[in-house]
Image (cartoon, rainbow, N blue to C red):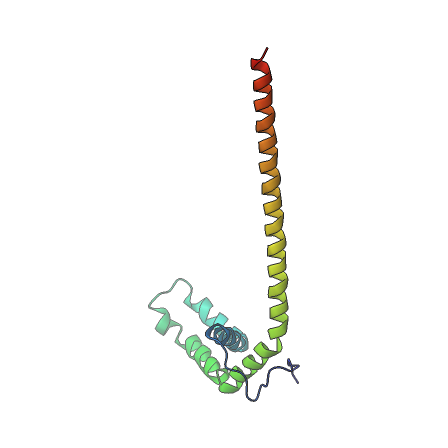
Length: 138
């Protein structure tokens, strides 16, 4: 059983933006690839240092990988990825808000340091001008 945010109805979810749909697709492909990791690894190992010849030299591994991907690339798996996306939506939103707060805090710190540096430069320039002015009057 998945825990979901009560504002989302998984049976009739809100339409997602293109970026949100892309995130769901990424989860979906990641889940399918995780199911077929051994087959993908076997094909990748066979295809190392091969280009065009990998198609027929690694035919067995390629067919095993493709059949595994087809076996797991079902609408049910996409639905599970969508449910996972919805169940972690609040968590991702909080993480993004925390990151934005950290960025804003750092931005304020940099602005403060720049103002302090500017103030020091102005004070040094004023001190230099005062020293130059007192030296001329002697």
